[in-house]
Length: 252
Image (cartoon, rainbow, N blue to C red):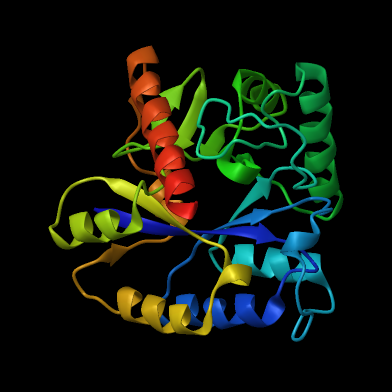
């Protein structure tokens, strides 16, 4: 199994010391991740220390792209306005799921235009909270997006005209499958602003394992795709719902 890395919640006001510390790990092992850029962040939870922040944020982001990192648009303002899980209910809140189509289209178009005004072009979308619905997919396709980073599968799939690149159902299981040399592709998700000190050492040890094949996200985008029908989607839906229920019960 080949594993790529995805970094969520990239904003000008994120926790830069933690981001840069994790970036140093990726650079050490020559791993080029996918990053989710919030066009107009209004979520205070994502904000952190500006120590080490670049003077020109967007030039820095474009520099990462030039170095082989893959860029995606991570929602619009990262503000959850509904209590809907949508097509992939890993959570019961969303910036998009449950919002009428025309408003979603405007949010996505505005977000894309903000990035474009700073010289950033991407056709990859990362939904905040992993939650999106059919109107989101429709609005994305009509706005020029071709790819979603989410879903459970062994390889990228095409569903309702959208390419969906899978994420890990359970990180420990993903690593176990990789060490067992099983076929397939997956993405592990990292929120650098939420990492604790000991977790940096944990990821250093994981990235250093010779029997886990970490690849750049650009390679994952080139993986063979399969068509997904409604039965495949239903299975994925209930896997996500099950994970949400278990996580909710454990947290009580």
